[in-house]
Image (cartoon, rainbow, N blue to C red; front, top):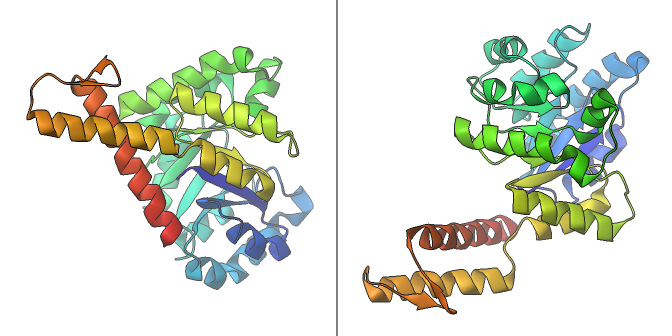
Length: 273
């Protein structure tokens, strides 16, 4: 799961386009992308589209409004539908809100970490039952801290989210959006940095961003070839010392190579399927 594409729940005419954009997951948004006056109609649009969601091979997640809002419980009730594959919980800061979501559905929960308190409590959030992976809401985090959105300014927050995910034993986290929709260079740079830090995917706000994100979070042909050389050489050595491309292959190097090969096969399978 590399690319997570947002689509407003109040724009049902965009649902089919989002599902066909090539993203690994589509997040139908009932929160920030929907005005207060349109919350109820957006829920109705989602309910009407359940058959479409169920028929799609793309994973469909629902971003509900946060705990404590007037729309939380009604939004959460939509998670019961078969076409909804998981719940994105915004403003995740403490276990209490996650307990309420887990009590209402057994489907995976993807908390959005988008505040100072959320980053501080990221490990507690990640350890909650039902949590599949953390998402970084970088834009809201920037607002909460009144800092700029540069990579350096948000590096500590990103690092804490990656570390919390690993310590909790959940899936690799998903990095925040690149707000410059038409800047492919910036998107590629942001995605590359996120992957190098330990993120497993990235949030997208436009279909044009999906292909670049998928590419950035997939092993390159060179990476795959090198990984296969390492695995093959190690197996031929039958546990003995071996060097590949001038580098000694020890167990961590082998395990990382196997992970790359496995990821490449998974990506290929999903694209063929």
